[in-house]
Length: 192
Image (cartoon, rainbow, N blue to C red; front, side):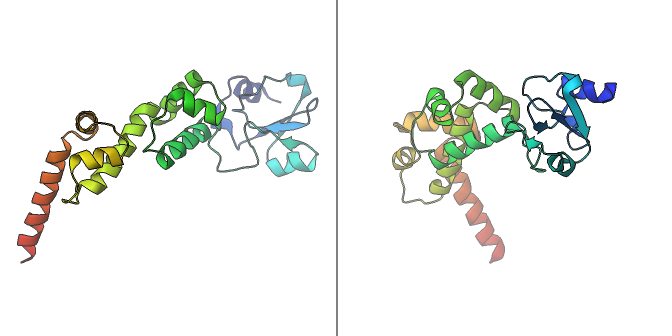
């Protein structure tokens, strides 16, 4: 193992992923350099340049960093994706950070911090964004009232829905509907 490789492992440097893998003799596990598992003793480590080579020597893939999956983006990205999926599938429901964390078996502070690190926003903001995107699809239907739409996407009051929609989309639901209808009228007159 070179000093550069040990430095990459010690610093959990993602830039070295797929350039080499390290296996730990005492555990029988092979990891990526960016793995967040407990730091190994360099004297117990072997460097491999392909995952197949490590597997052929009897080492098994780490369950934290999944070196056998070439398209895996890391545990944090996987967690953020699970949160996004959970919210998107249940956007109408009201749930807390604690509920999401409990469902995914992680600490709520870690979940919030990790989600923000990966996506740039909090799970709550993402939840509002998903609800507003669903609301936009309903707002183009003139027969549906704003109150009905607010309940349909999971808000208890139209005023709260309007406040959130304006902060996320930059306009009120009524303005969004009006602008959409104006755009349709303009397109119709241009095609005639």
